[in-house]
Image (tube, rainbow over all chains, first blue to last red; front, top):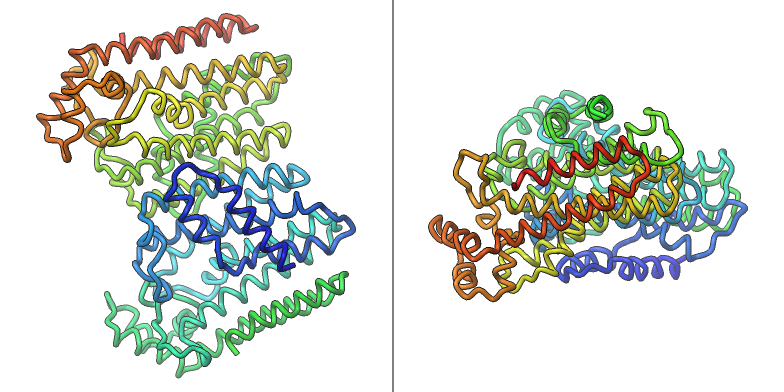
Amino acid sequence: MGKKVDQTTEYIHHVVNIKNEEIRVMIEDLTSGGKMLRPAFFLLFSELGPEKKPDSELIPLAASLELLHVATLIHDDVIDDSPLRRSKTTIHTRYGKRNAIYAGDYLFTVYFELASRYLPEQKYVVLNALSMKKILTGELDQMLINYNVNATTKMYLTEVSGKTAELFSLSTMMGAVVSGGDQKLVNLAKNIGHDIGMSFQIIDDVLDFGNSKDTGKPNFEDLRNGVYSLPYILGLQAKDAELIEILSRNDLTNEEITNAAQIVVDKGYLAKAKEIALTYSNHALRRINKLPNKESRTILTKVVKKLMNRVD
Amino acid sequence: MGKKVDQTTEYIHHVVNIKNEEIRVMIEDLTSGGKMLRPAFFLLFSELGPEKKPDSELIPLAASLELLHVATLIHDDVIDDSPLRRSKTTIHTRYGKRNAIYAGDYLFTVYFELASRYLPEQKYVVLNALSMKKILTGELDQMLINYNVNATTKMYLTEVSGKTAELFSLSTMMGAVVSGGDQKLVNLAKNIGHDIGMSFQIIDDVLDFGNSKDTGKPNFEDLRNGVYSLPYILGLQAKDAELIEILSRNDLTNEEITNAAQIVVDKGYLAKAKEIALTYSNHALRRINKLPNKESRTILTKVVKKLMNRVD
């Protein structure tokens, strides 16, 4: 599995052959040393059905999923317009907005090319397009939540279903599809991907509050950027007057941000978010147990548990 | 033909059903009252082959081409970052950068969806993806020409082949494809589209110098934005010392811009550009004469002559 993921990274660097040196280097940077979760899930699920596709078809499709992920990441970053994310300089700050917009567009076209060239049937290309649309719509939905003290858990879950879970879901589902899986397997794969994606995003939200293995101080980047992640939204949903009062102010100071985060921790909203994340992970684990192939099942269980452990 | 083009505009407004009100209005604005040249060429060529596809398939494909055009237009505009273009406020100035990036991305996904859903075979979806890539690459090539006094005609023609001509070429070619045209017809369509696109862009370049029917003063927006269009490049290619000297300066004043443009007019570079545009149009007209269907031939000849007349 690790070998195929490395081949996917190599393939990405090979396929992004673009004259513009700056943009080429930028894309190579952004596709090196990443976790490559989406290609990995795709490759794992591609071993579940009765058919065995050659690597010459699997690797490009695995690459396409990572390219779509990186493309949305790059554009998000320009749109958010924050100079820092998780204490690192953001993409558009490092490479310039102009390059970032082009690089994202270019990766969308490479994704489109690989998906249309290597998917086994045209109807799956349509499915990919619809997924891409859901991802975009999820990102638009995020604009309705940012800086909105009336945001609800329902709005949040809809947003994350698109923004994050959809691409995980597409990855696992396309894996099952290329392996010739039947409708039952394809649906199972789709649901597992969705649950993993939901859990993954919420765990990410929780990690913004710092974790026990982390020596540095948490920065509460989400709140700083006006992103209302699940722990805050649970407080807003509970009509927490103290929290609403702080979040209703403009241009929060560092102290106000720390106070808001402290409320979220003290009143158990953070713990509740963690619980929701683990519920999704456990759903995923139960469904993974129904998968046919024993080896993939073992690896998948390990991967999901490792993702869960990040907040333990 | 006019009726089908109107139906295409209606279809676009129907298909862009997005919750975000601002972005929906923005896209509706940008797809109303335009010339709809690409859908029109697609529809004309869709009448040339032996098969007659229903409007329920033709209109979405015609729409997809306009959506791809508008998507690139929106992103270009953010990238160029100029507040004015052809004396009008630019898209990102009117609607905000954030909305402009999302709107472009969203239109890319709708384009991808329509192309993958309605094209008759998967290999044509791949062709569309490759075209989209060429368009993007053409735009990147433009960055190599802007503010570059060593830019050559060859660089310019490569850039415009991608940036502008590729989408015209795709439109005419896909028209021939959906009508079940043979390889000869498809190639002919492709070449006609390419020549029309080249001519169209160069005529646009020439019009930036103002034309006789125009009462307002020309603004030389291209040069003002660092865009070296063909008339300037012909001067640079001819090693015109006077022109090179001005263009080598930074932050040109209005007077310097007018002087540079005057040189381009006086030394015949503008006339030479016009001549090149007309050569492409005449190529197109000669090839149009080889088309099978008499009615489409007559309309196409009229349209191309009308485009040529803009600089006469």
